[in-house]
Amino acid sequence: MTKGVRVSTASETVACERATIEMGTTSAELMKRAGEGAAENIATAFPDVSATRVAVFAGSGNNGGDGWIVAGRLAATGYDVRVIETGAPRSDESREAKATATKAGARIADDARDARVIVDALLGTGSSGAPRDAVAIAVDEINRCRLDGAYVFSLDLPSGLDATTGQHEKSVIADTSISFGTIKRGHLISRDACGEIVVLEIGLAESPEMKSLPLLIDADWVKHRVPSIPATAHKGSRKRLAIVGGGKGMAGAVTLSGEGALRSGIGLLRIVAFRDSALPVHASIPAAIFQEWPVTADELSKLVAAADAFAIGPGLGVSPETRDLVERILLASKASSVLDADGLNLFAGDTDSLAVLLAGRRAVITPHPAEMGRLLEMSTEDVLRDRFEIGAELSRKLEAAVLLKGTPSIVFAPSGERYVSAAGTAALATGGSGDVLTGIVGTLIAQMPSSAEAAACAAFIHGRAAELCGIVRGTTLDDILHALPAAWNERVRDMPPNVIARLRNYQ
Image 1 (cartoon, helix red, strand yellow):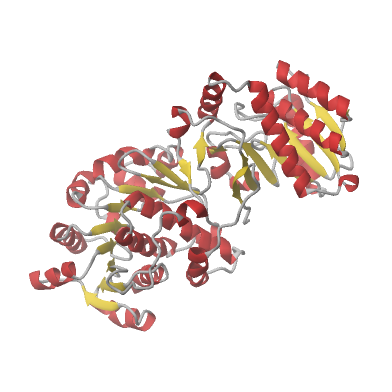
Image 2: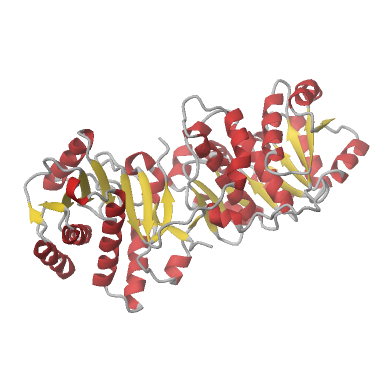
């Protein structure tokens, strides 16, 4: 099982590095590991030494020191390496790295003319605001080189991109960003500037500072948590899910949720919807049992007895009738439940009532930022600004996992853990995508003991199915649904020894 990668802000990165240094690793050793690991990654991507001219843009801080180590290692291997400085190194470690690199054959130059590979080592994690003066000029030159066909590697993150917020009004646009030890929030928020993201192991200590950070989940993490389906399984052991929604004219929402559930391994699917939805549901999902919204106590009792889990909300509609329906179901059953879409909009500004209804069960809510804003009575912008923290208090209050959908998606557990899924492409930015996810979550919450882990696994697989489609324009939800079996059964591929995470660029 791979080592977990943590997601950090700029200040959290500094705290983790400081804790590592206090435990006996020198800052010079951390710089050496970072630079040598980056050089190895670059050399692997461009192995033709004689045909690869490298230009390293080095700033005056420790990020520049990393760049000098890269320059020295590549020059020692035989690459033609030139270094463009925007300032003299400020730290002893960086000055030593520069001296070593020049002895190895790296040459100081004024420009990156004819370079095939550009290494951006201008600004590190601690920088904020737009680049200025010589650094701003260098950022422009790097981006011009990229437009002319050079391949750009950014060390730690593209210069000019804020490690915490992802803001980048003026930044390097990288083909690959090589991050050290942790992945930064800015990487995940602003994937457009980062290209492929590679996280290298540099030996940061498993300190309390590190363990408190959100965990970036990957295919290996998911594989070790989702239970396998044994040969002796039957529809009952694979669990029974009831999806409640499909108001007038909204049969498509419950249909998409049902397809997501069936393609994620549910044993028995029941669609509970407005009576007019019966025909389209039967036509689209013949494997599903259809039931009209329960009206009588007997109908409700039969529904509750027939479900191990509920997925409530897709296409439900917001009205006194649907609020009453949701309340009656949740009061009648303590089955595991996921609420999405109108199942949450019914409780806008009324999380107290929602907490009472969800009490005593394993539950997940799956809001997008606007739905989260309605629940908490705040703007979508405020939700996005605090996306890595905002679900924690709500999760504790509801005693339910909160899956805040977005780029990236973040899962908050009532116990305080946070999981981050960066899987997915813009193909998911279409109506009905969240309904598919609801079906996946509903299946997993029926089959797994941890609601938060079920939500995190569902978010990853949903995103991975989109990635497997490859293209964005032209991909539909049908394509993503058909990619789900491949996402569930994909073989986990080994990564190079020093690489602990890799996020491909699917733009």
